[in-house]
Length: 96
Image 1 (cartoon, one colour):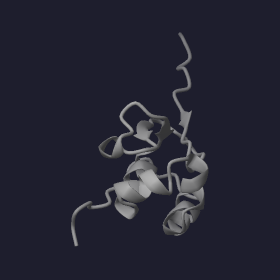
Image 2 (image 1 turned 90 degrees about the vertical axis):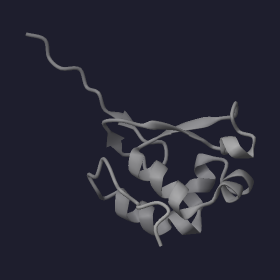
Image 3 (image 1 turned 120 degrees about the horizontal axis):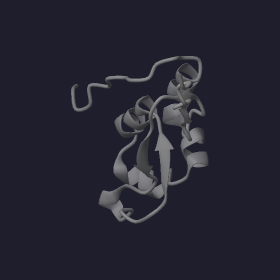
């Protein structure tokens, strides 16, 4: 009987080991970053970035992982997620 291979990967932003990541364009595609650098992020980080920062902010100020880690708007979230085991989050994007 074969042992199951470890399928965990690391989120580039929160640095947690997670089951799955998605590709985040560091410069949003809508702002010209279609073929630019990307980072593998867990779903909670990816969703929270797009909830808390708009595409223009991402393109102009937060186009590196280091800049995202230092973004004032993400500090409370990062403090929480680094201590969490959450794999999925619903941010209710677009709701007021």
